[in-house]
Length: 248
Ligand code: ADP
Ligand code: MG
Image (tube, rainbow, N blue to C red; front, top):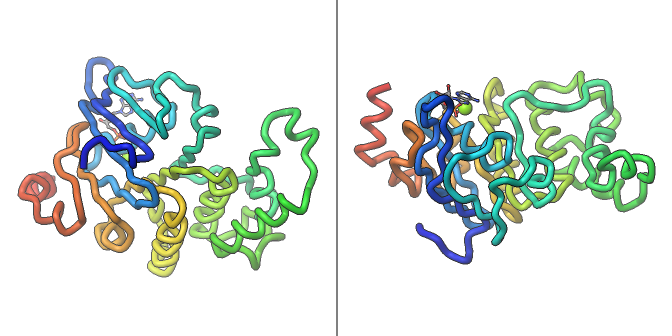
């Protein structure tokens, strides 16, 4: 696929160097709406760095990041979140001593900032939103439970729920099923398919079975670049991809 008005996110010639080492180099990536696009590749390929560049955690040294017609390069991290890009890190950043409900409530955009917090009221709209998100992530039965006692999988889903509270157009998940049981993986695959009905999801993943379950498209990275892209079927038969994986 190449550049088109239909893409929600278009990344072109993206690059970053760390002390002269090009971790991401001439990276091109086109994300269609309501799509699950998985980035795979060996350790150190630059996958996490790509997410860092898109969400503004790391400043790119080259290239363009166009999101719904706006340039993201140079924008601050919190602004990028407000523009509609949510990113989940590998370790969940939930508040362990607050309840599931409170964690979701805190993530409502109206609770943002000092004044936002002071003026924030637990309106019906906020309550409804928390409940609806809790249902999506399968935690509607444990709204009053402290987040700290949730299972590993439930904590991951809560964090996805906290992202959903902001109604992002793009969600980025870095290895979301690491450490999960088989059952939790299946539920996470369902959750990712569900939330991609009205937004796009970028997932970094190692588990090929899981990739097969969730991916509409797969992007294969190696040494900071895209070496193959397309359906899982297509990339898994691509000799360049096979070579990279056998080489590792
Ligand atoms: P992946 O997620 O594909 O395993 P990463 O994006 O984490 O790979 O890392 C790509 C390369 O960039 C690695 O060699 C890593 O050591 C390097 N790297 C990542 N972030 C930094 C940083 N902030 N400073 C220096 N080197 C980094
Ligand atoms: Mg990584």
